[in-house]
Length: 402
Image 1: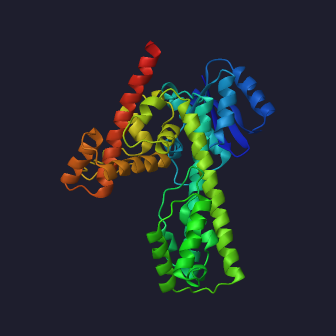
Image 2 (image 1 turned 45 degrees about the vertical axis):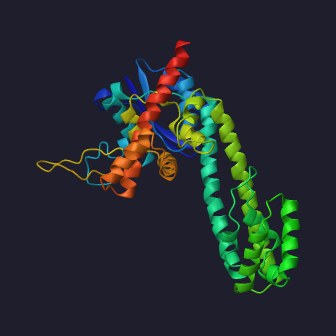
Image 3 (image 1 turned 180 degrees about the vertical axis):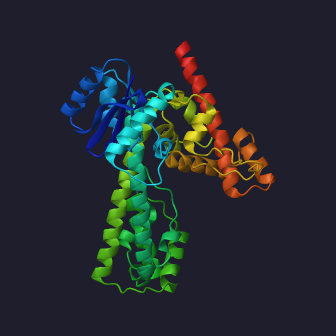
């Protein structure tokens, strides 16, 4: 048996090969993540006598090309969570960490866990694209929040609270009414220096041009806010430039989010579990693809508990000696992106209160027991994931039988 430990980093990896009883077949050596080096490595490992298993840590996206090439070559590849390997073999008080030592540690880990090593299974192309698309969506959403806060901060100095007066959902292209409004009426004086009648007429024309609903009452509210508001920054070209540049950046980010959301929905709709996932309460065209992106093929989890643990919302035992831990904490060892999406799904339950839904009934019981907000939200998410696992598995099984 040949245990191959690969310490993966950006653009290169360190490889070590060991056999039982500490026999070193190949001392740690470095390879680049090029097609030639990875192909040569696969040939080298396949030429070894006996069974060969390769172990590497999941390292974001760095490990993917290495695992994919070796798996395609017919080698047994196992990608393990870094948490499982972190403290393995630490029998010294000295903390020594090098890529070479890490590759040997992974090879030893492979020997110790030989029969329990999970086999790497490359995700389908559309699943890979969906997950990558969601990762990009998350990054874009963070930038969008920062840009939105920046624009609001600027408006507080030129047209206070105008963003609160024009609440409307975003359009399909990502545009929002208050953002479009302040691009044109960028300072309170753009409104207050006109007569109320003149502003209402101007606002009506603007709504018609931008295809927004017009309300004379809303126009009067905006005019009153402009008249009573205090601008800390004068109506100057520099102020106009800052506001309109902030609007331009936010619009571009909103458009990118809308495009990514469309792509995610398109990719998700190509997956077999799409119909059953979209039928679940709390899951719509935004959260549905996010759930599917993070969970992936549910059949890769051997049980409901495994899926819950992957999300990091399980509560492992905390006993020691005669002490029984009654106050268990959520492990949070898992996908933080999945936990975030589950929290949003639970928020939909909380806002809509569907009394006939088992998840909401469970949530209500926990609330009645006096559980804190985060406790009953994550306990309900646990319940939701178990239902998700059962429903999707049953649906996929039914497809296989037809």
